[in-house]
Image (cartoon, rainbow, N blue to C red; front, top):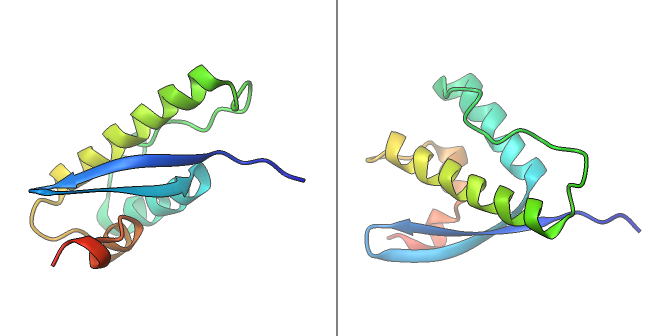
Length: 96
């Protein structure tokens, strides 16, 4: 049985608010694509920490960092989010 942390992130765009659930590896994959396709600063994503990664305080801290990461991306792409980001945030389900 392998354990992995799922982060539940609150997303808000205009009047719309919803949550997305992703593993850190999903954020990492998204980030790699954005770094190569959109020249996003590769230091923007909180680093992957190995030691104590499942401790409650670390999980909460990382969750906040990932929320900030996504909000930063939304500010960076105010009009049209890149397809990989839109898909990651489930825009197609919430924003018409």
